[in-house]
Length: 88
Image 1: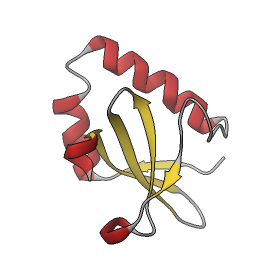
Image 2 (image 1 turned 30 degrees about the vertical axis):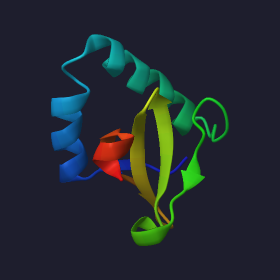
Image 3 (image 1 turned 135 degrees about the horizontal axis):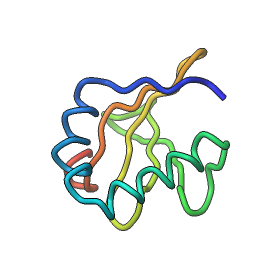
């Protein structure tokens, strides 16, 4: 498994949108564990993005919440987290 790096924007938005809610924080941790284990289908529903976000990918952390990330040769970089409208 490639290491995961967190962009400043991801850290900022995680702090304000996710970490203040214990339920969402736990849900994120559960989905992150699945991601690190290589799960990409249900329940993550990992998919490539299109349009101005071409080259990026996203996965679900539940309901309308998404993590947008980029994959490089040596790592994954989490770029943003939030609702569909917030990250797209």
